[in-house]
Length: 271
Image 1 (cartoon, rainbow, N blue to C red):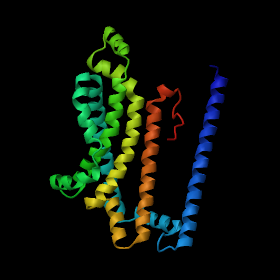
Image 2: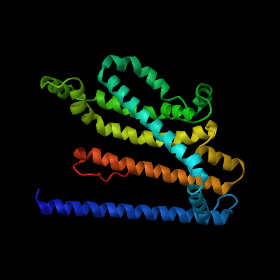
Image 3: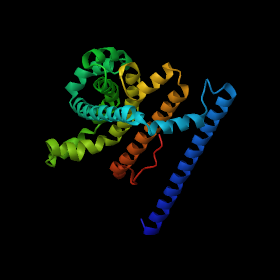
Image 4: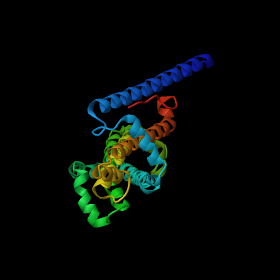
């Protein structure tokens, strides 16, 4: 491919991305406008205006809520997600690669991954007590499954010829894992990881509401119980911003790490 062709393709790709971002911000503006109109029509005592909620959310980021609730929530989410990622990839590759493990664990995993996570909160409260450890444990019980299932399915679907060829070339153990298995399953693993990070954030909020003792979920629940409606909506806005930041950073990292698979950094993924 000539330099001119590559330059033209890159320019076209950048224009598309700018267009997508522009439409995205326009969509957010329309959603905010709809929120504002709904609040004016139904009354701000039921639905606070978007402007009031946005102003209050900014105040949350510049107050003790930042260190007392928001930062601990971020730490719990990232820790739970990281542990889920390590467990999911490790167990998923083992169960997908070894057929005997697949047969032994299939029924157990099918049963456990459909267990409603909020029902585990009372048990986690007894085991870990009130606070961050309980929240992290609940996050792991929910977020590990998208990673594990995607990794196991991708590993089980590998062409045996590829693995046999790699072994004939002398690749064994860690070399086989790093040079053949992980690159082959990485697209499906990243798909599971992206689901897992959104699950981690959602489960974090539920866990903190039910028994976290602190965190953004606890703040939202406390604001609702004390009829500080604007503050509770502001907490929801902060959560939306947090989820958007997590997803954006994840997509950037995925685009860098999987650039070889798409042929271009970033890949232009949206959902």
